[in-house]
Length: 155
Image 1 (cartoon, helix red, strand yellow):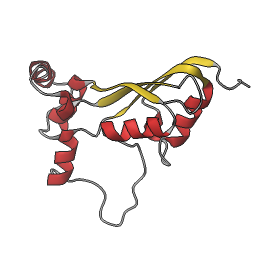
Image 2 (cartoon, helix red, strand yellow; image 1 turned 30 degrees about the horizontal axis):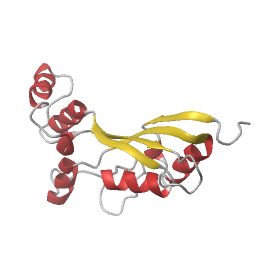
Image 3 (spheres, one colour; image 1 turned 90 degrees about the horizontal axis):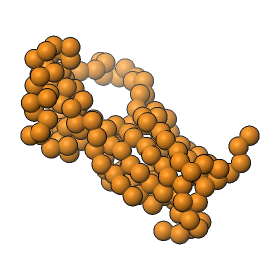
Image 4 (tube, helix red, strand yellow; image 1 turned 135 degrees about the horizontal axis):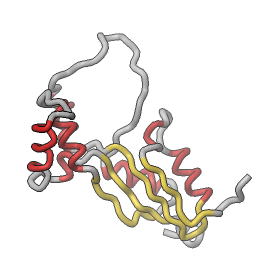
């Protein structure tokens, strides 16, 4: 069994969001395993502006019939929500930014416009659109870098 505060870094690429009860236990375990001053690198799906507008406008609503239970798959977080999860778990957030913009564009072309991911036109459009679309609109993931304070309770 590993002792507490053993690691200098903790890397979680797309895992924390799959715990139905939320990110709290994962954040707590990362905090427990990191030494003071250790770094946490974490990514989660980004609840970006495109998805917010899509939900608000009820675009292309699909899903099971009303009353059918849905199986939990993952959480999507805003920047503020991820920051709150990490600071609430005792971390100091050093950087938090949207990533995977081109993947988000591909998903948008597929889900909103019905273009197949594999099509040359879809991939070409994603390359052409990437410089013009803001990350906050289309990026697929959020990445945060956070540090465990040097002293317990330090900010």
